[in-house]
Image (cartoon, rainbow, N blue to C red; front, side, top):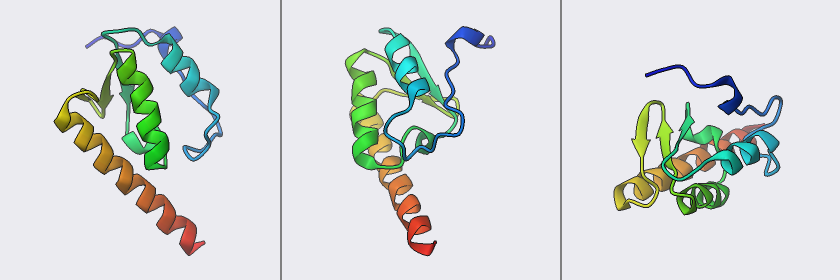
Length: 103
């Protein structure tokens, strides 16, 4: 696997995954084309709410883009891929809610 082109790496500095307005994420999704693979180190970095995650993954699926999470590729239109993304999204939201309730 080759290193990604630097102009195709999008980062939001100092912005929480809980924020709905993330310019780097929007730019990355807008740049994605059918057949691309959208790479994330962890799915919970994409969103902290199941609803927002569902909408974001839906945007990628509508474009024909697969999701790579920590090197494994998941197809958001495939039943197993959709289930996995949904379960991990619910767990991320649960973890975020627990942290917020403890502070």
